[in-house]
Amino acid sequence: MAKPRIAFFKFSSCAGCQLSVLNLEEHLLDIFGAVDIAYFVMAKRENHEGPYDVGFVEGAVTTPREVQELKKIREECKFLVAMGTCACTGGIPSMKNFAGTQRQMEEKVYTELWDIQSIPAHGIDYYVKVDAYLRGCAVDLGELVELLKSLLLGVSPHFRPHAVCNECKLKENVCLLVHKGKPCMGSVTAAGCGALCPSLNRPCEGCRGPANDANTVSLAQKFLELGLTREDVRRKFLKYAGNTPEFRRGAEAV
Amino acid sequence: MANKTLKKDQVVSLLNKVAATYQLIAPVADDSVVMFKPLSSAEGVVFDYVNSVLPPKDYFFPQTEQMFKFSTRNNQIVINPPDPVKERVLFGIRPCDVQSIIAMDKVFDREYKDTYYLDKRAKTTIIAVSCTEPLPTCFCTSVGGSPTSAPGADLLLTDVGDVYLVEVLSEKGEAFVQKFSEFFGNENGEGAKKAEVEKAVAAKFVRTTSLEGVKAKLDNMFEHPYWERLARKCLGCACCTYVCPTCHCFDICDFNSNGFEGERFRCWDSCMFADYTRMAGGHNPRPTKKERVRNRFLHKLKYSWDRYGLGHCVGCGRCSRECPVNLDIYTVISDVKEVDANV
Image (tube, rainbow over all chains, first blue to last red; front, top):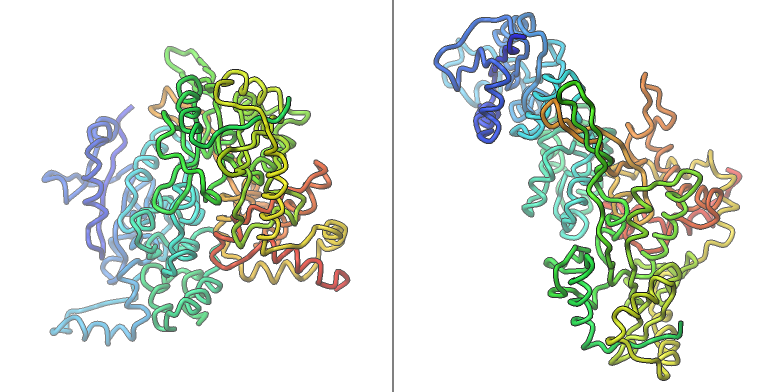
């Protein structure tokens, strides 16, 4: 059997997720042994045209040209993965959706506006069908390997959609929200990162987007009780996943 | 067997000797967090802690537990049992946690015998230590427990000054005392001192209620709007179920390491998750948070009585301490007593 052909694509994003893939040193040789990396501009000089078996897409879609490219990528890839928060929910670029009109945003960033065509930032599933999501800013490498392996074995990957709190509790961390009064978003944010930030004493920023059935309204109230301003709370929920109904509800609750 | 005594300055040497033959599991502190850890010596064991963040249930029902290993090379399927568990001594658990193990026994030791749990249970000698300083969130006495008695443990130690009074509660406890007999003395009036300790501790409880009438009322509260009120607040983070010493839901999954070898494992799950009850095809009998929150409290306070004849809340107060939005089972008990069941 020929090795599956894999491609990595990038839209509006920091390229950190692609870079993370290269940080998989421990597994890279195994991965190269099992798949054929056909297209990965960041990592390779020689890149080949599609079709591909699996496409990993990083970044949010923020221009009409990206929409067209994305649609072509969808046609070329049998299995399409949204890699990282930007591709999943719009991520950091999606903050602009809630900060004013497109024109206002363009004026803030660029001096020459005649060639700027910007549309609200969305995850890729706003435009095309997505087969799997790798959440996180940046993606969790364990989940990436799990997904690749599951694809090779033809089984469902074991991603659990529960809150970060679970992983935090299992690590027996002191709760930052309850015991230290820090505005941690772990209770509404999807796990899979191994409670990375809270384990390092930093409150969860919600980069992985909403957990299954997240009650953001209740958490927004809790944040107000902790002394955050309404604007603080709004910003927290709109930072990574304001496009999702769950986080939007949290932002609008106060 | 008659009560014994154990000099406080002898405990460390006893535990060191225990660690030489058994796997010793005891509370240690990391920063302010107390946790039960397997130890190779008594170094670092804390004796004056109030309670651990996670209960010691991990040693009977681990977070993640291998069920079997498999290999499928050369067209042959080979299944191997998990690595065997060593004989263990679980030292220093509190009476509420002992009660929680009794509650878990009822779940795992029924018509279907859960060998994974029962094997660990049989190989563990439990040495409990009476509580002398309840936390403000503790309420074991309200749910039928006591900070100074631990039926179900093998030995119960109570701090009565310079010595611990050692109550031998089972054959396993007796065997332990005989094996390490050089450390134990005979009781000489310490039993009377324990009665004083008991009285002093009982007076320290801030939270006092009782379960009287709660189950009978809950029998008719399945469709009560009270659950909706709780659900609006609940974040669904499931912290309560992870810190609960009697929660025992699990999921079973396979881990395939390279396409040929792997293992089947089970890991903690939670009834607070939407996908916990979701079935193949998508139907979910507990579709919203209301049904899930209701299930958790009814399970602790009603279903457990219906099924096993005992409560599944032991009053350890862990969920009260860890809930980010103060959804507190103690308050639920008080609320249930007060709400109008006929609404």
